[in-house]
Length: 300
Ligand SMILES: [Cu+2]
Image (cartoon, rainbow, N blue to C red; front, top):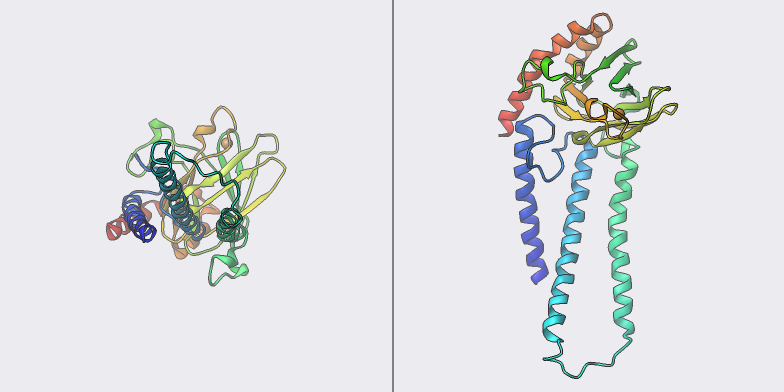
């Protein structure tokens, strides 16, 4: 009875908290916000699964903590030396020992099942994308350099460019160019498309890590090794991440900016970027910003 009440109370609080987080998150870009205590809002199927798994686990550990705390308080009150001067000499109770062994095992198995399905989905788009077609994926390669990223688009006429963080004196609009996160050339991707992401590092360099929280991936960029992950961006916008492996002097200054645009816009960008990257970047600048504002307004 009490547990059911607590459970209801907790899920109510969780839903309220999520609504607040989702609200503040989408009103701004997908980047860290002041006083944020949970994940960034999800913009990919995997990140949605991570949110769900995190919320479910939070309910489980909260119920366990409440139960253990309540038992402790009960024992302290009911069985202290004053109220219970003659202690019981019981040393074994087979039933209770079986229960407190089997129940935790069941709880762990209950957590392991969704945990493994999430882990497997992170390597297999078919498990997270309903109409997944391997023929329609887009391959992009990111390479960690000292200290910036390069992006290669083998499916689009070998577009290849470098992406450097904007220094403070290069920022012209602090609203759309967050300090330490904005870059000169965003990694542009189409929405609704499975991106096959190959990640490596400069063969003469060090280990980096390619990570964007709201898209739910973090994968090491290792010299001489090609790692693979995938993601699908559901909404247009710019999603920021940072190198997440302590890689050296400018580790903190090699952010990742993923700009998701409509497939039509992406096709235009990819066509133009093969000959003139600056013109292609300019093509995206205006409409992308407007779309972002519209969406934020809708969500608010
Ligand atoms: Cu790095």
